[in-house]
Amino acid sequence: MLHAATVCSALALVVPHVPAPPAAVRQAVERALPLLAKGASGHADQKTCFACHNQAYPMAAFAAAKARGFAVSDELIAGQADHVREFLDSNRDAFAEGRGTGGQVDTAGWALFTLERAGHKPDEATAAVVRYLLQRDADRGHWRNTSNRPPSEASPFTATFLALRGLKAWGTPDDKDRIAKRVAAAREWLAEAKPGDTEDRVYRLRALAEVGAKKAAARAAKELVAAQRPDGGWGQADRMPSDPYATGTVLVALYEAGGLATDSAASRRGVAFLVRTQRPDGSWHVKSRSRPFQPYYESGFPYQTDQFISIAASGWATAALALACPE
Image (cartoon, rainbow, N blue to C red; front, side):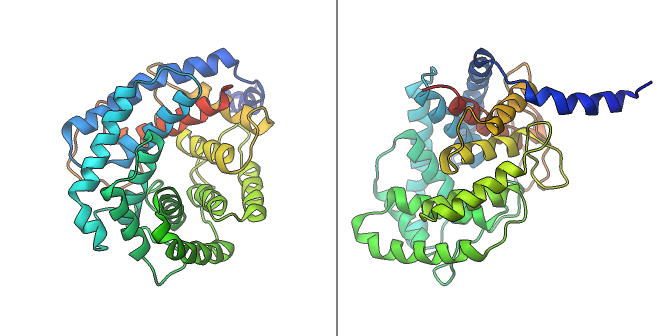
């Protein structure tokens, strides 16, 4: 007689090979969007600061869903962009002088990422952030992370990708030569630096794509695909189980920077994992492993002390599922 654990283990090897029906994928996106909107707006209603967990990652979902024809409010996107712009504008001098804000490159980079996905136009505030990114870590071949809040704020690969993307998207013709030098230095660093976990691997791939290292990016994409688990997901670290945060970030990176086809086996298995692990309310739950350092508040997203990593996971999972839908 088989033990329950043995049966569950056997099922885990079989279920991921059953693709999620297209209708189920669309329904998963539709269930997730209202809760992401609630969490994003809930943060902006209570705080003046920019929050990557409640704004950048939901915006990745909003932009991907809107591009695939899902109903996403223009007012929601504009409101989020206004909140981020006001944060950058209020700290314009700090950025222009190279001091930055809490979170440093991660905060600056995710803010620009959010504005880019929202369709915001360059202004004096974004120009100040570009000047900051050019000054920051100018003596190095990469940009450093200053926080240690895994998984999303603990990787120099993430900081480097964000800086590269920010400079590419928001730099001016006057910045061209300085940007080219930073890109060349980052390309050399990326060729030698070794990733230690999934977050590193995801943003190393994205950074390699930004610097035009096509062969290295192709190898990095293959490594990420090879790390897919039997259940169809990816884990944050080699000894951690599969979870929606890691799976969502990997799939979006593979779609956007790794050339992964949405009808590939890896895509179908990853999408099935995300559909299967979504909660009835449209969210995905991930346990936090970062030490809290800010006063607790409720943003409107569930899971209390796990709400920030869970809305991050839900944003990336929703973006991945939306990108897997036909245009």
